[in-house]
Length: 375
Image (cartoon, rainbow, N blue to C red; front, side):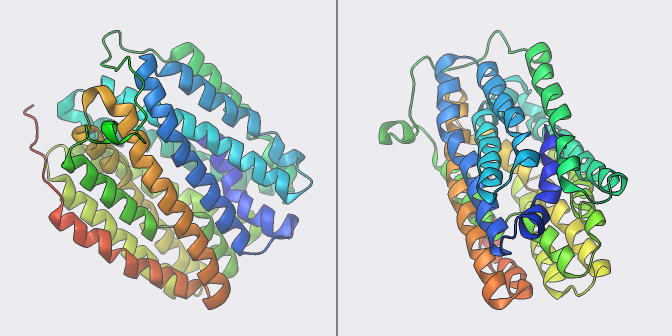
């Protein structure tokens, strides 16, 4: 599904600005709303999966909605249709996200939980690497005809749903709650530890500092990159993301996860500084590579920290709450980033992101340390 989604995502900012005639700020609004929608929906799907005692039905629904949205992109004649398709795709992501992470936590041996989440993140990103690479090849093959290229995203989406239906098995002894617990209810929120809430706070602060990857694509285009090579930005980012996610996750099973999370934030600051100072394609790509490395060093580790600090019977709810906080912050970050770009330029936007990243970096110093389980 990532191959399908990222094939579209790699071309979407250019599609909106050049084909649909929207402003540069529009992709920021759309991507912020789309990613926020996905994360906010997770707050409902997580508790539902706890209550049902099954994760797979929600995976099928989530991946199915994402697959159904794919034909809408090439068929779109107005920006509203593109926006609707993107939001449907992200609703699907939101429905499947928390149950999928909870299922991994149910299955993963505790002593290698970081490695398991790192592997999942890495495998996700292999698809995200292949999608933009396919977009580059298809753009050259079809002479930059974006609509034709977008049709190719339908095929892997359908295959993904078929694989979910035929290949995913749930553990027979999964620990679940048979009572529906809305994470918005204060009595249920009290069941989460202070360690868990600190992880939520770090995740929210971190998300406020990083905006949509659509701005990386627009930055590359601004420096003169040929439109056919634009998906290469996502190829570079996802390559470094994929290569680093599993080693970082595995390493976090041995080392203090706070240290590796702090390393990821330092990489984000470096990426922002390089992208803010970039004036050519040659300097943009190293910044994009650093951006991918920061994702590899943070996303799987944050997921492992949530699983580690959450009650076993409320893992779906825990991931839902975490993603609600992150979703609100993602929306704010992308909207503000689009406004900064329009009013003060791309460099100011990236430099502001670097400055804000110092906040979650400082928080890592005070985060609670969770004792490692023996191997």
